[in-house]
Image (cartoon, rainbow over all chains, first blue to last red; front, side, top):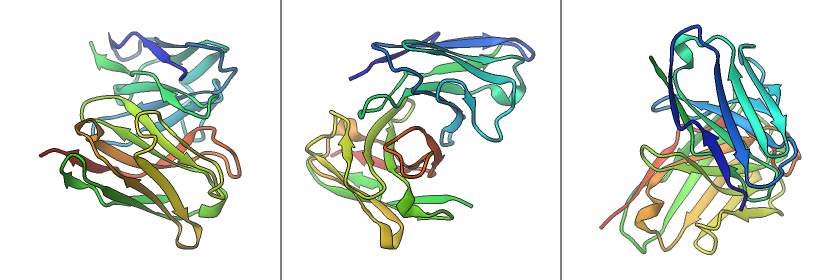
Length: 107
Length: 122
């Protein structure tokens, strides 16, 4: 199976901060990388698909980049509603895998 | 409006079976691959299984292969997960989820149900 490793596992940030979360795959997955946001008690929400394509309705402060094994999710200016847990996810292999998650907390 | 509504969760003893159902509406069900994704309480997401739009291609996570069976009934716009030989580590919220692109083998998930809790305990 392809292992997905996110860093950091958690971070504290303030409203207005620029936040970067990284995701590394154990082998090349081309651009088959997606990012989700999950808030407590809610189902995940798709933010970015195919590494850098913003899902419809997602604010433009979210962006994704990378290819191969190294990927990044960036929130350009953190908003109060962005405090949540973020997951990367590879769909390159038939057996999908998620990263362990990055919890973004209020500083 | 796309809706995915899971049912069938509950408390079950180790070694027993349970069948989850997911009723889909608001889109052309037979055009999309469907997935089950689970999340143990307080833990991360784990993909469980996928079935292609036509039911021909099926994949399972290693952790459930041989014990779980995914199926679909396109006439009823319904997805199922038959779970046998349940273990304590199968305790989780189980989400029914739709693949983003129609007629694809699997790209990402754009719609999720609200989840149904399966608790495996004696």
